[in-house]
Structure formats: structure tokens, C-alpha cells
Amino acid sequence: MLVFDVDNAAKVYPRQRVPANTSISLQIHRGEIYGLLGDSGAGKTTLVRQTLALLRPTSGKIKLFDAEISTRPVHTQPAWTQLDTCFLAGLSDWR
Image (cartoon, rainbow, N blue to C red):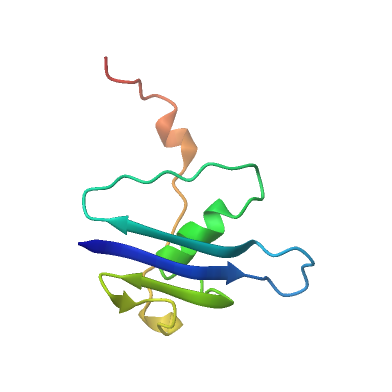
């Protein structure tokens, strides 16, 4: 079962010369784990925000369970907040 289908997604922010991301295509199937690796400014956070329907791509399509989410109106999108990293400071890994 196809969960995420990203087809040629791109994002260009207004007044910026360099696109945040360009021509990203990927498919994530049920049960798969996918990681995004890249340099600072490579567009990882932009892609995550696009797949969560928090940011519309300039071009391309993003589908979640075969429903296009890249064109959803802003008022129907979920809220997003950044986790405070200070909360994580006292945690240790499991061994």
C-alpha cells in the first residue's frame, strides 16, 4: 500500500534566488521507514512541511493515501510547533 507519493515537488520561496527544493520524487509504502539526510539548507525541513501539508509546493504533487494534500486550503491544515530541545536534555538512550 502506497502511503506517501511525492511527484516532482519543488518549493521556491518569494524573494529567494535558490529554490528550497527542486524535482523531488519519492514513494513510501506501508511499513517502510524513510530518512532524510543532507547539508544545512538542502530542503529537508521544507520537504517534511510539504508532506505534512503545512507548506504548499510551488510545483508538483504530494499524495497521502492517494488523496492529494498539496492543494488543501490553509485553514484545514493541522497546527505545527517545534519541540523544545531543552526537554530532551535530561533523557538518556536505552541500552
